[in-house]
Length: 151
Image (tube, rainbow, N blue to C red; front, top):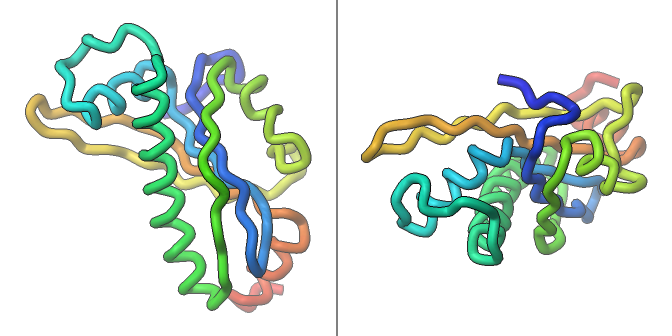
């Protein structure tokens, strides 16, 4: 699955700080985001026609949990201290939403770690696709490469 630049997305962003810095972003297409929020809120499919405050809160929490899990694993692997800021949700076309990252926005020449994330749900059975992006600052990538002995 892909997310096209003009596709409507939900992006949960968090600044990463500690021994290295950067940004994390959890991306979902809006329909998948609505569906995930409905499941988290124990609502029936299709009962959330748009992203209201409660749905946004649920998706912020999903992004927070996911980023926390990934960064805990990365922190242990690299033996580095990593922390996250509170989550901030952005919606809109993918290209525009990602540009709100400012200095941490992924650029064509920027290395970005992208983890395709799939949620398998039961009753009713379905899967939802999203992406977790780690956008480290330039110095952070150097530190990561040194830690894994690539550089």
